Image (cartoon, rainbow, N blue to C red; front, side, top):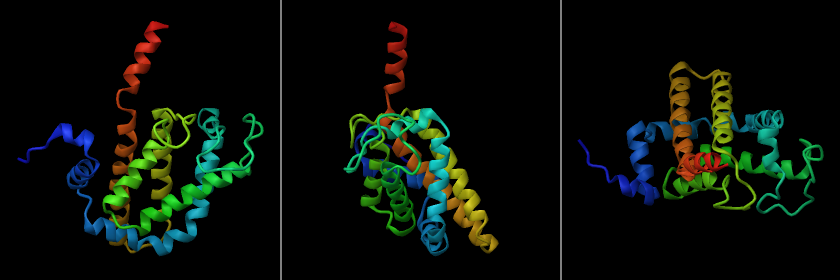
Length: 202
């Protein structure tokens, strides 16, 4: 039985990522499967990005989080949801970010820099990084990750891969998305309790 420093899991990202990857069994074979899928997944990224944003546009609870100026975006900012159309320049800017994220998943090495990148992806949807006005509730992040996981699964199943490769690729992305989900959830620690307490006060 290994001894895990649980306090360190909360303060040391590299330690946390190492523990998670070992626990879920995310190893070299998984990384090879993800990188090996890059040539066939790359042409499908634009359609996948469009599908994600079409889903986000279907609900005001998700779409409203694109109203504040996005970090790094310098173009016109919409005044309300009616003005924030799917073809708005700020949405195009956000789509580029998602496309780069998906490209990073299938091309970058899974080292300390990648762990930091995945952690930043989680943090940037809270006021802790990027624009302080952006504060996406955890329920919306979980909904998004669930949709992305299913969309990726559907995409991989449609690639016509040899069966063993298909299984390896599906399992690898499944583990990876759970790693990403943890590095999202960690930035919401304690916030649900705070919300509950504030609701009781009201």
